[in-house]
Structures are given as structure tokens and as C-alpha cells.
Amino acid sequence: MNQTAVASNKPVNGLWFVFWVAILVYLPTLLTERALFGIPLTNTQLLNLGLTQINLMLISMLGALSLNYLTGCAGLISIGHAAFFATGAMAAAIFDNQLGLPFPLVLLAAALAGALAGTLAGLPSLRVRGLYFVLSTLAVHYVVTYIFLEYQFKFFDVVGIPYTTPHIGSIEINTPVRWYALLLPLVILVYVGLKASLKSREGRAMLAMRDHELAATAMGVDVRILRLKAFGLSSAIASVAGALFAYYLSNVTSEAFNINFAIQFIAMIIIGGMGSLPGSLVGAAIWLLLPSIIGGLSPDASSENAFLSKLLVENRAQLVQLIFSILVIVFLIFAPGGVAGLGTSLKNRWTAWRNTP
Image (spheres, one colour):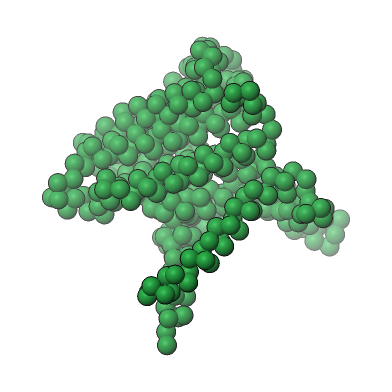
């Protein structure tokens, strides 16, 4: 592409940036007031979405970004990612409920605890590969969730660990809008940070390690250190997400971090695109919002579509599981690059068609 074409694309990219910023800024008002510039909208028109689902989606985006960085970019397959969410939730309980640290320091402590746990969990990667390493991450999952359960029973109750309302200075994070104002910049910060990390010299070395470990080693890359760093950074982000998840729910038990929770994040990055940071965001959005959208599309039970209404309402959980299962299988077989890969392919075809004389 020549310089004139690149220059002509800059205003278009700038307009898209302004467009998305405007949407993200206006979204809380739209979902809170249930109106578009004063025009009332129904739940069906809003696809049954609310800020609660959006906030949980943002937390899940942090988890998906961290797992995709580890698995998609570093090539280290992990099925124990829920363990680091549990680490963050447990760190939040210790440093807030028991030590009384302010909320920002609690998040920092959760990140440090996660980085330490992740580095320890990554030690088997120095000795084993493939299935044995995957099983080692599963073992980490069960060890951490057991520790969480014992901690919960010893210091709290069977009903779970309660969390206080977080504060940043004198501002209490006690409404969905305030949570959105906290989570959105955090997701953007993590995304930009990981993107910059991948473009750095060390990030390029990590991608080389993923693509061909022997070749990377021959070029002088210390793959052992890179593995531990990837595990540490990924786990730190996941632990912060786990702490935020616990605060947002205000009460969690060890059951919140079961193996199904970990598998959800694997499904997110498969659907969004393995190795694609934007795909992590798309996969998390699809996974978290699709159940609400299906509920929002449910017709009136008294209408002639009563059967469809019953299917979408009474069997929504089973229907969602079926749809997600089909999506994962379809993407694994027909589009291994996920939604991000499909988008890139379509963009390349469009560019080739447009530049054809």
C-alpha cells in the first residue's frame, strides 16, 4: 500500500476511534435510563442487557486477556486459570477484611500474590511439556481451590467470604455506573500494556518461542525465563480480575472458581481467536452477553410463538450451553483463528479486491 493510501486511512481510523469512544461513554446512560437520547427503549430493544452484565463482561475480558497472553501468545496451555482468580479473591479477603488496606493497595497485593502463584505454577514448564504440563496446571487449580476452601471455613463461614464495598479515596464504588467507570479504563490499560509487551523485544522473543522453541533457543532466547515471566504476568492480571470479581459479587465461595469457570476462559479465547488480544475481548463479550441476548429475544408466551418462548425462557441455560458447544467446535474445525481470524481474513480479501485494477 502506498503512502497516499496510508494517509487517506488516517482520518477514517480517527473517526472510528471517536465513534467507539462516544459509544463507550454513552453506554452507561443508555443502559441506566433505558432510553436513547430521550426515546424510551424496551428490554427487547436493548437485547435484555444491563450494566451488571457489561461489568461482568469487563472483568471476564481481563481474565481472557491474561489467558490468551499465556496460551495464545506464549504457547503455554493452562486449564487452571480459575486458580489465579481464586488467589486474587483470597488476597482481597486477607488484605481488606483482615488487614484493612485501602482498595488500590488490595489490588496491588492481589497482583503480587497472583504473580508469585503464577511463577510457582510455571515451574513445571521448565521440566515437562504437552499433556503433562497441562495436567500440572490442573493440579494447581485443585490445590489453590482447596486452600481457598480451608481459608473460607476457618475464618468465615460455609456461606462464603463477604467483601466490603470498595473505596478509592472518598469515592465509594457502590453503583453499576461507578463500577463501569473503574473497570473500563482498567481493561483498556491492560490491553494496551499487553499489546506494548508483545511489540517489545522480549515479546517478540516470546512469540518466537511459541512458534518454534528450538529455533528461539538457537537464537539465544532464554525460554525458561520467558515462560516464568509469561506465567507471572498472566497470573497477576487474572488475580486482579479475581479480586474485582469477588468485590463485585460481594460474597464468593470456592465453588465460584470450579473447573467449569476455568474452561469458560478457554472457550472465550477459542471463539475470539487464540493469540489475538482483540479476539480475547470479542470472545468474552460473546460468552457473557449471549445468554442475556437470547433472553431478550424471547417472544411473548401468549403469542403464536409460545413454543419458541418456552424454549428460550425455560430451557435457556441448556440452549446457551448447546450454542456455545457448537460455536467452539465450529471455530476449532473451520476457523481456528476465531472471530479475530475471520475478521482479518475478510479485511485482507476486501483490501485485495479494492486494490485490484
